[in-house]
Amino acid sequence: MRQIVRQNLASSFGAKLIEAQDAFGQLCVGIDPHSVLLQSWGLADDVAGLRQFALTVVEASAGRVSAIKPQVSFFERFGAKGYEVLAEATQLAHNKGLVVIADAKRGDIGTTMDAYLDAWFGDKSGLYADALTVSPYLGLGATSEVFDKWISLGKGIYSLVATSNPQGESVQKASIHGHSLAADQWSQLNALNGTEFGPYGAVLGATLDLSSFGIDQSVLNVPILAPGFGAQGALLSDASKIYGALAKNVAYSVSRSVLQAGSAGIVEAIESANRELAVGLNK
Amino acid sequence: MRQIVRQNLASSFGAKLIEAQDAFGQLCVGIDPHSVLLQSWGLADDVAGLRQFALTVVEASAGRVSAIKPQVSFFERFGAKGYEVLAEATQLAHNKGLVVIADAKRGDIGTTMDAYLDAWFGDKSGLYADALTVSPYLGLGATSEVFDKWISLGKGIYSLVATSNPQGESVQKASIHGHSLAADQWSQLNALNGTEFGPYGAVLGATLDLSSFGIDQSVLNVPILAPGFGAQGALLSDASKIYGALAKNVAYSVSRSVLQAGSAGIVEAIESANRELAVGLNK
Image (tube, rainbow over all chains, first blue to last red; front, side):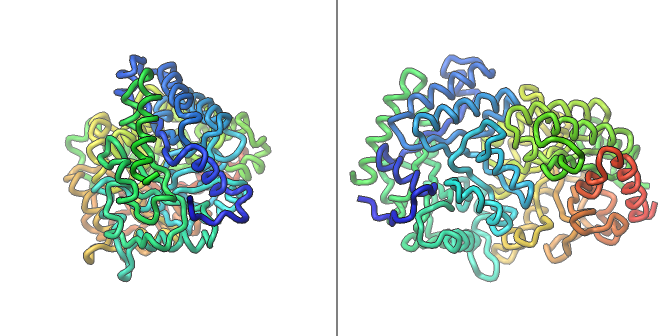
């Protein structure tokens, strides 16, 4: 039984996420239509191939997992036509009850950030997202105000905090006046967040030693997005071991390890990942 | 006379930039079709308004400045249709000899970053860019290898280093083992860069005290993109005062202060900004 406080969550991202995860588990399927994957699926590296790949992954995910995470770069690669496919895929996912986490890592200030949020959460773009990944290089404080409107409409934000790639450490472990930057970002997230679960979450790579980033696992009550499972090396069966007290807050994202099963094998690959995660969460 | 070493620059981004700046000066016109600006231009906040705004700014810039800098968020706001306009505007700018700096602040790792570069530099998207702004939160080292292919094809990269907004300082002034993060990024840029001008540039806000970021102005031979002029407070007439020895390397970007002149006034506003910058550069 999950210990997350549920009151006053009526329309929040946190409430939506918990509801979906209680029904369909904590797995999140990444949609990464890399040219190599398109090829291994027997699809052309073009817009038609992109569309078939993306819609197949959404259909395979619906009813089996709580969330999908389209990796936006692989759609942007095809420009306007790629965004048409992304709009269709995200709308289909939304209609099928999946939580849509757009992995775009957008980061800017003021009216520019406003426009990015409008793109992913508003009604002018045709795109649909419940949550967006954002990059804090320009400062989280720079952007928190621009989130307010969307938070009140039930949208969520996952800020990059500590990622899986070793090269990121030089920035992410940087400190100022003896404070870890990552921990500082966490504090800001929690200050914004109060006692409610969500809407400000964080990306925390699964292959990291979290304590080395100065992250105190015991005090956090925020959604976590965890890439790094499967092909990147972390095991879903180690979920509790890796995240400790945070394990219940995590959306466990798998991409390549599931996608490489191809269109014929993806349903079984998702179900297998679900079983492995259940072991990892002692369920 | 500019002191930049020119040998072996045949097809490089640096060579292209120098050629354009020698012919048309160092001003860069930002294309920021914010809804408020669309309204003040008498345009609807829709795709048709976006298109008229963007194409008008490109036409007004051609032959008067060396570069344009479309702010991608304001196009992404309209999804696929916005990207169609961005493709048309960037292709028009390219055909008119303008250097196109896509201000997208993309940042990711491995194949995901590959796909972003393919989007902006490749031939599948319809988008055209000579250079792209990138965000280094995931680490510059994470992405330098993926740039190589495009660098050899004459493309350029402007990495965020120190931005104008005060909230960014907590990340950008962070230090690790006593090293300033910004200075560290600079060192990486220069190590990659060698003695050639470009292709790895940096975004350095005009309203900053650069020395407080540990940036040694005397040793740098890289392109700089400088937002923050005009509406954000810095004066083009202070260009040399702000950038010192770096002033010759800078693309001075103006957006709101020029764009708010409207479609009837933008040509005169650009020419006025050019005159102010000439004063600032003692030309």
